[in-house]
Every structure is written in structure tokens, then in C-alpha cells.
Image (cartoon, rainbow, N blue to C red; front, side):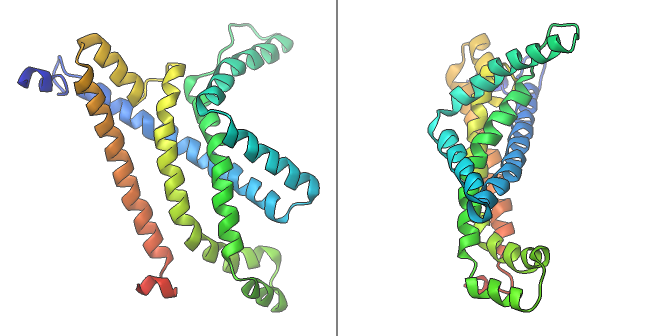
Length: 239
């Protein structure tokens, strides 16, 4: 038993360092995908709330597609389809091949676009939760649209949005395991290699679960702290 545990150590025969690096890669790709989702999700939410009919229709189609297609299929489309697109563009420009797209970029974009569809729902709901009377009062007082958004809409909407965004982050971290199909050495890929090499499948898959649990637990505390700070000055903050 002690010999099996030693496989998780940082010694010459241990996989500890490799697992730590893979955990960092999981964190990197998750953070990049989440930020991509925030940026695009904000635009989609805006299109659904304040856009004209064509923009609202496009946003609805986007959400329907990326919430309805399996995540793994989207990743495959970006990874293998991305290779073909890059090859076509490179060939048209007369650039020497071979052409490729990294697993990190493909996974980040795929998960980011998937997350954006769900994040747009969270942000749209947060905006709609802001009292209309408060917005009208800001307009009557002569605030520009930007100042109205910065001083009234954004602070109140974030109080509602932070818990939902925390849930979306947790989803992104777990979905990042699917990026292993691109060959990117993140947690899931590394534990699969370690388990196959040592034939200690239970040990390494349990270790992988531990890595994900550490990331999600710590990040949950960060979002709880952010939620608590956002409630300062609000009635809910005293509950």
C-alpha cells in the first residue's frame, strides 16, 4: 500500500509533479474559457435584452445551439475542424505547412463558447432583476447610458449574478476534463496516462478527483467571498 501511495509522491518514481502541472493546466484552460465565456456571454445577454430583432434572433439561435449540442462534439468540431480552417487559410496565403491548432486554444474556445450560452442566461436574469424604477430614476436624473450602467445597473445586477457565475465556473472546471481528447496534458489526460502506465487505475483516478475537488472547493470560497463583499450596503448583507 505504501508503495502505491509513493507513486503520488514527488520522488524519481512519483507522479506528483506531473499531476501538479496538469492541475495548473486545468486551472489555466478553465480560467481562459471562463473569461471568454464572460466576454461573449455579456454581448449575448445584451443582444437579448437591448438588441433589435435581428440581434435578439441571432442570440437566441446561439444559445439554442450551444446549449443543445453535446460539449464533446463542440470540442471535436473546434479541434479537428479548426485544423482544416487553419490549413485552408494558410494555403490560401501561400504559407508553408503543416498547419495545426493547439489543444489549449481549441478547448478554451469550445468550452468558452459553451459557457457563454449559459452565462448569458445568468447575466440576462441579473439585469432583469434590477428594479425598473431605479433605472428610470437614473434616466430622469440625467445620467448617460454608460454612467447608468456603471453606477446603477452593474452593481445591482452583480449581486444577483455572482452566485450563478460561480456555478458556471464550477461547470467550466468540470467540462475542462473533456479537453483531454485533444491531447492537452491537463488533469484528466495525465491521470489516464499515469493509470495506464502503472496499472493503478483506482489510485490515479481518485487522485484526479482530488485535484478537481481542490480546485472547485477553493474557487467556491473565492466566489462566496465575492458574493459577501457584493452584498455590502444591501439589505441581504445583514442576513
